[in-house]
Image (cartoon, rainbow, N blue to C red):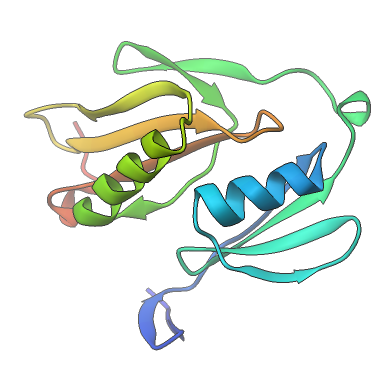
Length: 151
């Protein structure tokens, strides 16, 4: 595994994802204030955010220009939105983010909970959408060795 040093922290190479939003101001508020992501470079058509050391970029694209609506897939008895993105956090970070989101009145598609309880891959998870409808999942493992565990 390749490791990088970002802001003094050694971690796997950061991922980059660009996604559409229909309102840059709403994205700036949601990702900056609600999620607490520092803002990087920006123009009048996109904004870079630091999402736990990963580069996520909100690109202005009106809904009228988008394709088919998101679909869902069954996971552990729940329909989860596809596509979605997020970060695997440690448990204290995940708990703090869940509380932060609740304090901002974020509506969850899947409330913060433990999934696959007692099974390989047991994890804390939560799903919610940004103001443009992009689905996010944040998860945590009590034992990070379970990240790729098979059931």
